[in-house]
Image 1: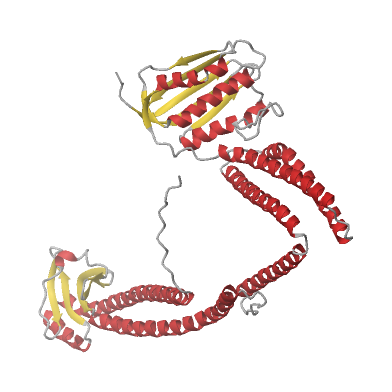
Image 2: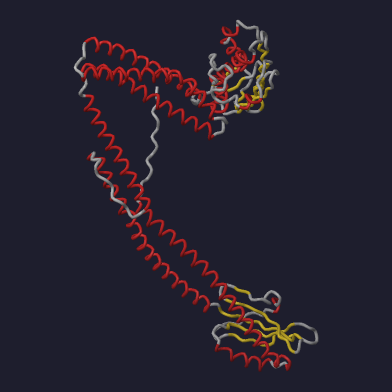
Length: 548
């Protein structure tokens, strides 16, 4: 029974026009904002650097002018001289400090405070901290030494206002915002023109597609486009229309020829032809599915030789397909003969009866062999079917393996082989018993058929133990083993030593798929010719408490 699958919610649809406009605006906005931010950061750094240089130069000039009054100890004259700095609106406060020659201490000497600006405390305790330009929210502060003939005689503290710098930066910011808005407007205009150049030819193509789909008129052709990609689409669409039109014309001609045949003959042959077409469609679908599985196997590197796999498939389906081809060729010859008799107006009931009898037999041969080929390919497809649909259940591992061996008793009773099981009798796990059952059956039958060939009494040892949340299975037999070449591709499909003797070469490939896909584990093989074979399997399980 096919279960109803949940439909995926439809994806939100958008137009090329809106996408083009959105992309252009986003790229333009991000680029412009990034450029403005970088430019603004560099501009602020440059303005601060220029202001710092000016502050140092200004402080050195004032300090040099104050050296005379410092030497003569005349703070009154220095205060009067500093009042001339009112012409510079950026200067907030200036302090002059003198180094006492007797005790070497720094003392306040003179100061200047801008009009309507309150005095500030001395900065004698911050001589080192303010030796370089220091910025606060609204001010720039700096302390420079005053030297006379190589001797440091005092210090000058200067405090500048940053109001003019901020005003200049704000003015620049407004200008940049205006430029940003104008640039976005230009980008919008360009985006509209760009989307129009893209969407207009696309709309033309869409109109043609809609017309062909609605009116079934395959004689129309899409116009050439100026864009290379759209022109390629238009050319491809026209090519498809050419092929459809040619196909319809051929189909009409074929139907015209078929209608000329005898009605009774048409009915008989038509029924078999329909059955043959259905078989061909199924066979092609199966072959296509097989091709998809081949690509998947190659991509996941689960097998290394694609050539061997194709050779195995070809060997298995070659005979039924060959018989089908032979029967179809014979049927075509009989149709040609009956046509000639019909055209010569010599058709008799005997001819028609013999033709229908032979046609019926040939179509039966074709149908039977195509079904056989389809079944062979379906058997290969069945190997790759995902086994993970079976639900997990909790079971006692030792009892489970006893049931497996019991189911194999009819096949093993004619042999004297010994099977040893090493497993904790109370080990209980939660896993998929179906895939595990198929794994053990395939391994045991592989040993019986291949490993113990010409060996009357062989030994198989199955060891199982749970470590953490993984079950480790070690499967060994003392059979004839395999050589290195066969060991490397033992898990590939259609690899068998019993080709033509009933072996399909899918047993170990099925084991590999069950371990890795259905159970999510891994499997490795070790073997030497004449020394048996060993399979190491590890699968994730949930180990349960001991069941009493």
